Length: 164
Image 1: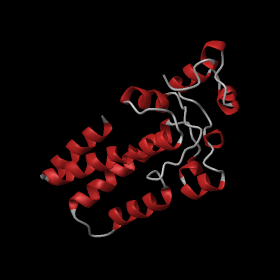
Image 2: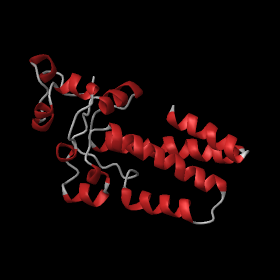
Image 3: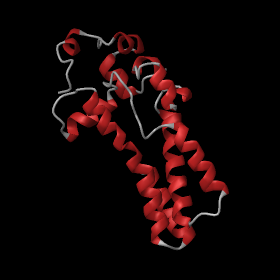
């Protein structure tokens, strides 16, 4: 929704469709790295439903998130803000920046965990990066301590450790 609104604003501001598309694509396609994480975390056969549940319930034990690396995002944002670039490039920077602001504000992860080198130094272990579980994660795990132990709270969840 945020990417759609931003795309509409970029299209209106620049009076062209290219910035609108660039803002939307940059703001949404950044999350394609979650698909890679699903595979690398070996969460079973991919279906859209299983994928969404795994993401919402914080079932990834490792966060690789290669596209969500501030090492490349911050320089790109500075470049698009300061350099004389085409409107579609600036709009892509806006889409990317908006996505990262939303993630930083709402995912319950430390800011430093968005640096790839920090994640690498900690073995990509999601238990290190998550400071606060969102409601969907708490509904599955029961508590942040249960998440860090890797064991959902309650016998019913213990029997269904795999993504259903």
